Length: 105
Ligand code: FES
Image 1 (cartoon, protein in one colour):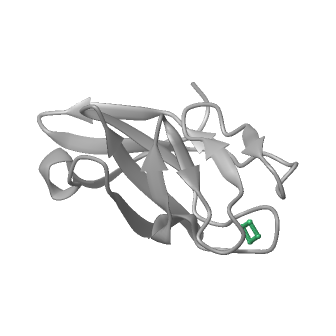
Image 2 (cartoon, protein in one colour):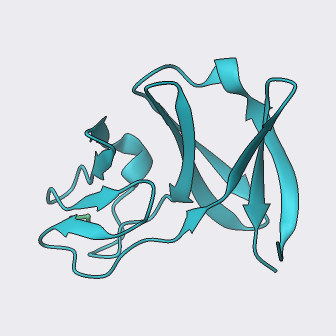
């Protein structure tokens, strides 16, 4: 596993169905929890820079609050126009209730 594991926050600091955004190594990264699972992905929409952390999550997708593009939060794939380019997702590990995210170098 290449990259650096960085501790972000405790699992219980992210509410079910909600997001929380962090600056990690100069990247704006959004964390989300759905059905108890934690996901990490770029906070910036590939369509026109909308903040995905201000969007809504459902069916393992985040909807951009600006123009409604959607992305799969596990794979990063764009699933609804107007975005056609996916977002980067990050591997997440949980240790003793803490969330660690693998940030590529
Ligand atoms: S900026 Fe996200 S859909 Fe346009």
